[in-house]
Length: 70
Image 1 (tube, rainbow, N blue to C red):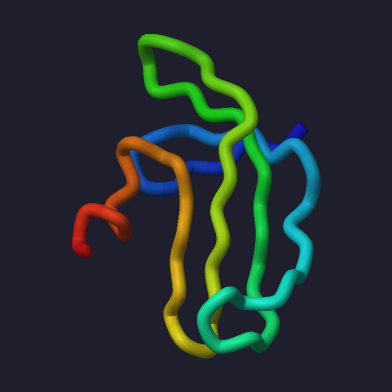
Image 2 (tube, rainbow, N blue to C red):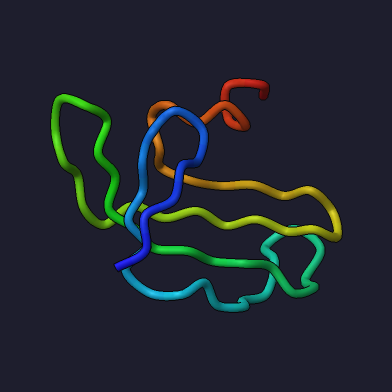
């Protein structure tokens, strides 16, 4: 298991990221599925979709700094 730090939570990547079609521009985007530990609880089944082409971002991380900007 690989541990990485992203935004304000530590995430354990369950599966390497994979490429999907971006819901916005229909080019390739990255989809990651992970478990997150925010210091108080351990939540599983989270996701993050990011597109380098158009900047699309979608996730279900309550502490996401990208989502907080929009």
